Image (cartoon, rainbow, N blue to C red):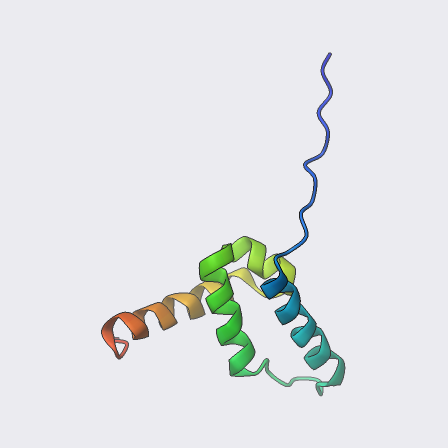
Length: 85
């Protein structure tokens, strides 16, 4: 009977590692209830377009659907100039 080996884990790309460090530093000094700064969310959304939502959310320890909605919102803004609701 053949055995399967677990899929080897790949380290996140350097861009994800750098943003993960920025988020870790922010989390260490934030006050309870403080929201993640917009510039960190934007960076996460940009990286998600390159590296995929799941990989980005996992590496950054952020909510998958939050990144997805922000990435879609930013894509809509850049495509049309202004989002239409």
